[in-house]
Length: 168
Length: 68
Image (cartoon, rainbow over all chains, first blue to last red):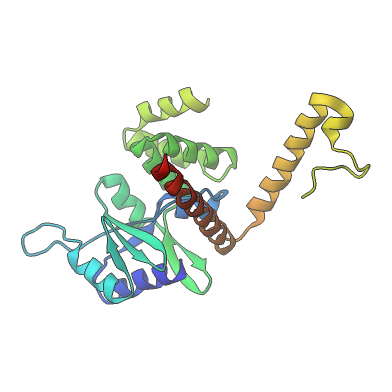
């Protein structure tokens, strides 16, 4: 994991990667009990190419030079498949901007805040996403008022009701 | 962690289903306390171990599936 995080931070320093934050199960494990995951999800602002399109090629090229290996939609670095997801919705954009710096050994790693992780999980809405929301609430690892505000502001009320139906 | 009590007998052997349920709940709660106290680095290391176990299980299943 350390080598993957180092490569991402280096790519950011070099300008290949804009502001980014770790999301998904790896981010959740900072706040709540760890669950197994196959990959490291990274949400990021990426500079559009001259065509105006977001291209992952230059970033993935640099990550390959830093020891990564392309495998489908991932770059595998030191055994960790890394998936860089462009900040693609207003919720994710805000979440990346609000990310907090967390320590991993001596590295300062931007990690999504718990309320945003839950809101993004509600937006994604797979069974494992609802389970993640439940883990945060069960461990009191989330500010319910802040989460409720995000649910309201990003039109996630129906998803929240779906969560309550499953876990309430 | 041993499943046996200080008396040397598993609780379900001594007290039936309720005792077993209490024992399981206590073990789970002890694990949760331990998990909550882990650092991020320790949790990531735990995830890596879980991934290795899952990969080993997948590898072990593959030849059987191919031979079936």
